[in-house]
Figure 1 (cartoon, one colour):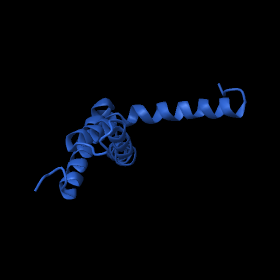
Figure 2 (figure 1 turned 180 degrees about the horizontal axis):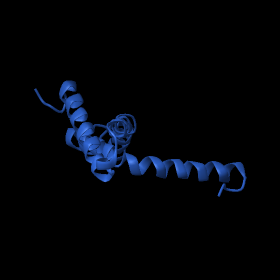
Figure 3 (figure 1 turned 90 degrees about the horizontal axis):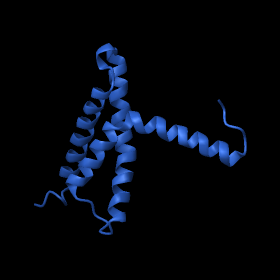
Length: 111
């Protein structure tokens, strides 16, 4: 059976990529000075960000390249990258959304 078409292999690959990306994201945090609760929260945030946003990004990439079907390794790479970079991407996205809402609303930006 081809692993590209087996849904169990795809989910296992996505889970492994997400969990390893979440573990990698801790290397960018001051984990030695963090409590276990803070580490668990950082790990959970990275994992859920990759699961919900990473799968959307991977699907978008597959459609952008035209085939509509994403290679299992590329899907895993996207999931790993999204989990690893979650603590950078989330604040950047929030700040850009604030700027967009402020500009769209016509109010002065909060300083």
